[in-house]
Length: 129
Image (cartoon, rainbow, N blue to C red):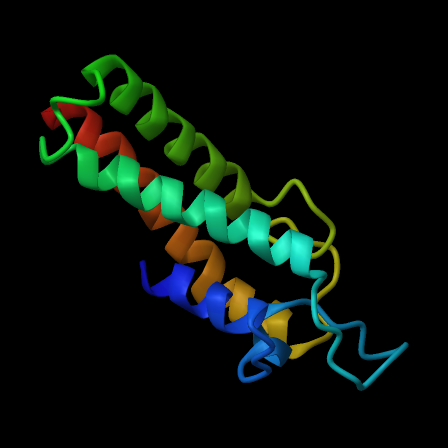
């Protein structure tokens, strides 16, 4: 939920943390490029949905959402974060090709390991849910 709040802050025009939160090619521009509002909004919706799916595992929405949907959602969370951690992208994940900016360093030491941890936790919750 905290990450959702940060994306909402950026969506509303905030600039704090953009330099380390998004890739910047240091050879082309020293200026921090703010992501497009539509991309921020889509990411915000996905993060809120993932939060609700995780919260649903407590049974709080049992009257409204089936266990099958919650398990499917949890599998999706695990797969999405596992792919993000591995990095099937040029700029993100353990297999990224570009390591020349502040984002790349944060991605190597914080973001990708965090994504791997989220994926593992999602898989572990499946065994208890």
